[in-house]
Length: 172
Image (tube, rainbow, N blue to C red; front, side):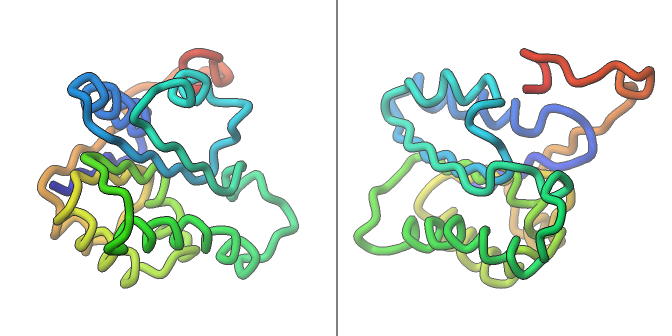
């Protein structure tokens, strides 16, 4: 199955982490590929890195909005290893996973850092072998069309609007 966690509300990655925990609880093999998240910042990574049956890969450690003075061409080239990893998962000799989570890939698609057509083709092929979750704000319509489940996180109210900063243990 292909599942999407999309929208402008909080909880897309958190929901996918819950899916990872559920799958690992059944003894499944899981692969998590993250974009734009620094290993030393996000609390969930501290736990996930310790879990058995989970292969974890992180590319581009900062969100694009925090990468000043970097060209879009450079950002695209920084995304290439993540796409290479996705190609590898689709290869015949690849380790097989029961669940593959592609965290924040929708941001890279929205910002045209990853080729949409290639990504959609890779995910379509991968979702025939594994359950796949794709997260992030922004998303191509082609992913919505082929998805089996789409969950939109919608912000109704957020303490950011009252000037409260990101909270350790809540946002990161």
